[in-house]
Image (cartoon, rainbow, N blue to C red; front, side, top):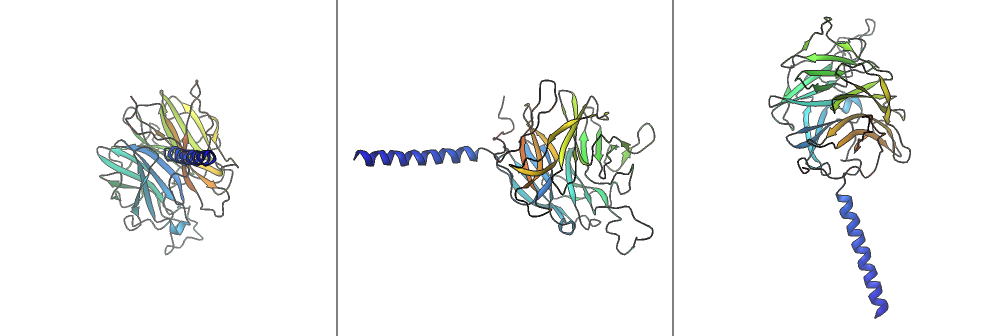
Length: 342
């Protein structure tokens, strides 16, 4: 009787322990935070919900749409399938990349790049096969963060090369005075433009130029900006997106235009967890000093160029405002519902 009772208590203990472990796990987001191959995630808060707009990570010819994901607590994510695709954006034929969303006057604008536009060569350009010679950065508009989105301009907002920056990887930013800016650029050049009031074009700088180059040391692509304690944090990706050298660096400034002097890298591969970590954005829980790094990384082992997943981990700061190195995890972050903290 005694031995059976002890075994019984032991088994109950195991069950309780397992149950408790499951409950704890359910309170964290885990990484990746949703299934599927997704990269270049843009995190933003709309209507007391967290939203993530990523690139569908596949061959260029398969990148014909965008999905979105929403969450009330960072743990449970809802998928919104094909909020925008090439049946809506008629000029987009492939390589729909890096969506960036922003709200203005009750409308939701989704900036994106398409077609992996290249400089045309006079010797090689074929007007019947100009898929890589026409494209750039476009805009879609909707009444809801989940869409349905429609083409806002019917053509790219930016299709030419300025300051040698490829027109990709755009990020829309609203400054404290209400001015909207667009950061963008691949091929190791980053431009900054002032969006006009209706997002149909740009207001020239005082110099008369449409775009000001703000490229910091080491910049490759993936610009992002946020403000904390009146400090402007500018982030970007370095290295090669197809390999382990990919990483995130940052600078700090007292205004949106910089100058941006590189402070260091804060996210890179950890061979015990993942490689190729980069192309990030940042989420803040409104009304708190809780910050999160949203980024993509490559699982280990990785068997394909496009095998990238979206993850989230804590973003923390030192007393002087500099950013601590981001620790990649499999657990992700704990639940944090907007408005739950007073």
